[in-house]
Length: 212
View (cartoon, rainbow, N blue to C red):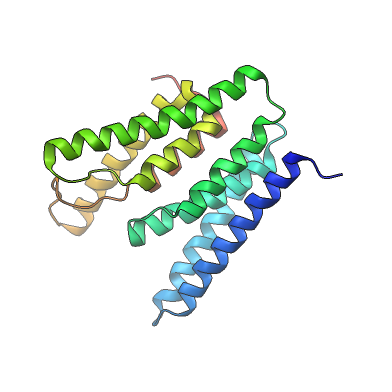
């Protein structure tokens, strides 16, 4: 008889499949050789995180880790191209993480739930403060939803590590982009923070808290 764990995992897998089909339809509707190159990059990302998960996934969580990696690859790619993090994919990350907590200890469950609440709440609060100071939003709600969804995977205690790694990754990306393109980057330049969050959450999930 299917358990709640199986149902949540199936729903998460269906969400991944639906999102993948949506992306594929968008790619098919595009024009020019860029289509195959973009699709190939996404496929390469799926393969890379699958191999990475095979090498480093926590015991008993290989399938969950692979699905998480696929979701994060898709989120990163969409954010880079569109500057959005779809609610469907963020929800799939959250549901997939929730299915892991069903067999966890009460302490781990509490840590995961607090990770969701604190992760989302802190980012929304930071965005509110930024908007008060600059007169416009600085962080999209998609970023807040993603860090909240990742919070259920890594727990509240590891959220500072995720934010630290994500911030450092974003800074490196900004300076690398500036060096390669030669374009100036200032406070008004849009930057996709989703890929940095995805990378930070992925690394923290696989390897646990990393000392700073």
